[in-house]
Image 1 (cartoon, rainbow, N blue to C red):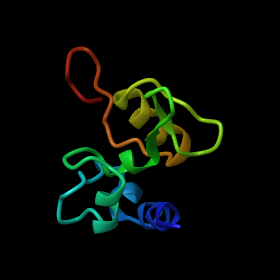
Image 2 (image 1 turned 180 degrees about the horizontal axis):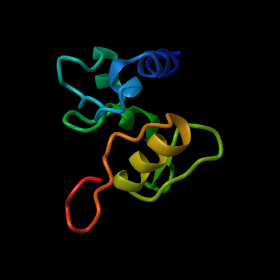
Image 3 (image 1 turned 120 degrees about the vertical axis):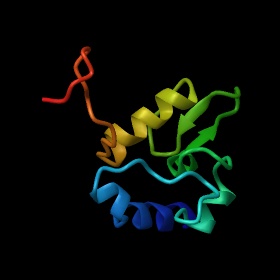
Length: 96
């Protein structure tokens, strides 16, 4: 129930709608409930990653798995929240 509440809060958040970086757990703009499920100082999306029996990180959504924190966050942003908070820059560093 808590994770559903957090998912609803995130889906209605300004940072998600505006494609801004998500808050970190412990930040004032991150729901207090997130601290129950995710590590302080990391993306609030980490609440949707859990550890399975063999110690590997996995996505808490059905039939999704991951290997490490970075890939897990990338997976959540792309597949579950359609969140793209980063601007792609060409190699020369200049925007279009």
